[in-house]
Amino acid sequence: MVLCVIIMVPFAGTQAFSTSTITASEERRASRQSELRQRLLRERREASVRKQGFGAFQSKKGVTILTNRPEKYRNRAGYNEITLEYDPVVIPERFRNRATPESYSTSDIGELVRRYAGQYNVDESLIYAIIKVESNGNPNAVSPKGARGLMQLMPSTAEDMGVKNIHDPAENIAGGTQYIAKLLELFDNDPVNALAGYNAGPENVKKWGGIPPFEETQNYVKKVLGFSKQYSKNGVDASYLNRSFLKAKLPSAEKDIKQVAVVRKEEPKQKFQVKFKRGAVQQAEKVVEEDDYYYIEYQGRSFRVRKSLVDTVTPTPPSRQSAERLTSQM
Image (tube, rainbow, N blue to C red; front, side, top):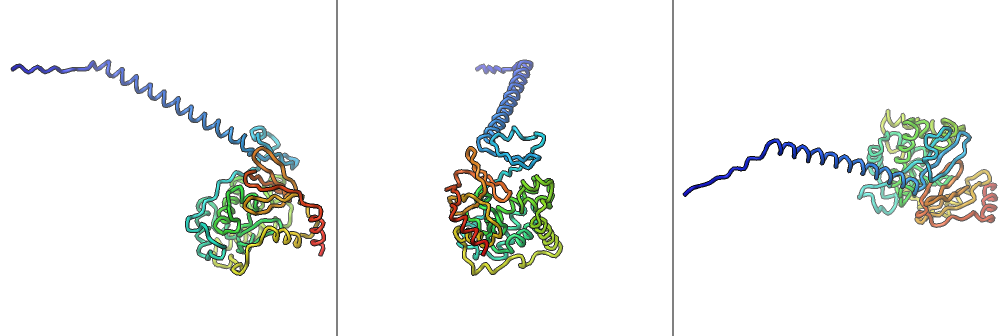
């Protein structure tokens, strides 16, 4: 019996050439695919910006320009971009569906501050200080301007962040912390200008090149920085949290309007009421409609909100304005 073994020996030179050719081809193809993906992503981002109407700019004269073509004004001499883009707020599972603010303990508030301070890279003492000065720790607080909750979010800003219940401490702290973080980013991590923007709106800070010449804003910045320094040095106790809200009830939108009328000492300027689908009401002096957004102007501040979140935009009836004037004079 003869055993015949045939051994196939490949030609080394041919094999090496083939492998090298395949490798180079794969690298070129991968490179082209990567470039294509990057170009598509860039084009999608640019198209998204144009479609969604992002863009608010302020000229040197203080004129606010609202546009869905922000590329026309970016890096253009004499214009400052002031629009802030928000991420949807997400709260921990165990804080969802809480019935009332009364169900939150002091330790719950502390946990939330730590969580969002870390998430948005904001000093915890600054968040506690904002809570202290804005609402004195009362989650049911409503300001004459319509700001609400522990960190006094404006309804339009809250809606843009996807906040469902503006008086809920978890959602309010998440939204307020994100807002101050965005302002710190906008003003190169300067807490003075960021706090001035929190109180008076970033548009006014850009307009005046720093803290606006408003006594309220100047006092606000001093108070917040003072409490922040105190909390940072000595730690935080429960003094920032006003537990008197335990017996309070959430005010209705109609009551809020009446409260605004009673507190106001001068003739109101608002000419519109923007009612959101979740029930909140935002007063406005001017409402500009552009593409998928409403731009709301109120007391020198501009807010951008998606149309899908808005129920109605109605002019304030003359009878209501007259009633407000009478009430404010009482």
